[in-house]
Amino acid sequence: MRFLLRRLAFYAFTAWAAITINFFLPRMMKGDPITAYLQKHQSEFNPEAIDSLRTLFGLDSDASLLQQYLDYWRLLFSGDLGRSFSKGLAPVTEVIASALPWTLGLVGVATILSFLIGTGVGAFIGWRRGSRADYVVPFATFFSTVPYFWMGLIVIAIFSTRLGWFPASHAYDKGSSPEWSWDFIGQVIAHGTLPALTIVFASLGGWVLGMRNMMITVLDEDYVTVAEAKGLAPQRVMTRYAARNAVLPQLSSFALALGFIVGGTLVMELVFSYPGVGKLLLDATNAKDWPLMQGLFLVITLAVLVANILADIAHAMLDPRTRMMES
Image (spheres, rainbow, N blue to C red):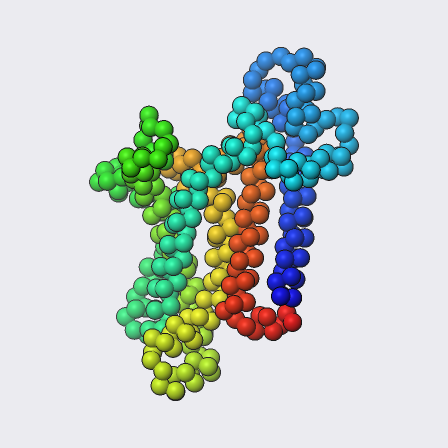
């Protein structure tokens, strides 16, 4: 319990620091959303309308920076992230909610699959070190160095342009609208196959190499030698003794990967014109849309913190030494 409380206190402080930076960082950039909004629409506004816009975006000239900061926290606790002027003054929560499912569904499934497959393959290769299983290592090394955009262009050229098996862009067919029907679900799967394969292939090598290296290190530990000397089944030694401890460092990396699922994979979304959070963040940055930028950064930050909390809990459950050191 003490371990959990200490970690929660640490993450609470981290969340406060991240939210504070999230508030001040856009205000340190050149320009402001009001000026960008007026330039975008190229229309004249009377002074009263401009003052109303500044009040709407929390940039009231009569309010001090401290008052704006306090108002920002008050709005956060009420669930109000402001309005996005680059999206027609729509609520930021609605704009993010419209893009978040696409990113979670695609990047989330692909990341989990690559972790599970890569960790399993890496554990097996590490256990069978010195055998023909090591032939996988050069391929894993190659795929771990391949950039996302290059892998994406390759799968588009092969599976879309040449073979014509899958569409090359967008999340569903043009002219369709999101709905709960088997036809639309089929479109989503077809359009998401190539981006998912890109993420899996580009990240699989890193999981394989990381798990293999940790397995080789763990296999030299005394407790593995003792387990083998007791005559335990090789499969049990591999899973219950070696892999269980070798996977612990992987959990931290997996927690970060899970947290950044919310942020999406920007390059992948640009290559495939996929309507995810990553592309939304780029559009908000180019438009100097402070409320949308702050909302996206907030969601990404909280997702990373929650993923790390879950990783700490899993780490403590798998490795009792963690609890002993914190007590």
